[in-house]
Image: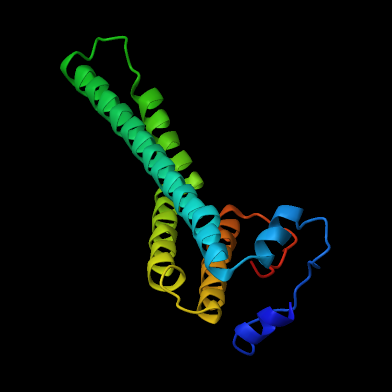
Length: 184
């Protein structure tokens, strides 16, 4: 812990709430922490940054798919409503009046899509992917010293934490107890 304090610029290291002997830190994690910083950098890039890039990428794709699905559902039901409206104009004696049903389904599709904020979340997740790739390529992978590596970790964890906080705010979720990071 003392070594970490010497590597991180003054003021950017928070007070750590999780101790080195805490149950939240496994023996494997302690073993990795004791290793060479180059190996820790490789592990951090593979197990944390790339994992988060993949997760945010999957979520962006999933939200894009849901946004398209609800858009197409609304479009299809609006077209169906327009078709029934044309039918009633051309054949007023028809007993098939499903215009209100299809317009209700269309409005519900739009409302559901807006409530779930699929497009907004897709954009947010894509931005997170871009930021994490930038941190990985410009800071983590290229850091020539252990101090630069630690600064990159602070940037990477800040980006992940920021996106999680934004997500909580958008979903109306109450923030959960924070576990502050320790050195890798």
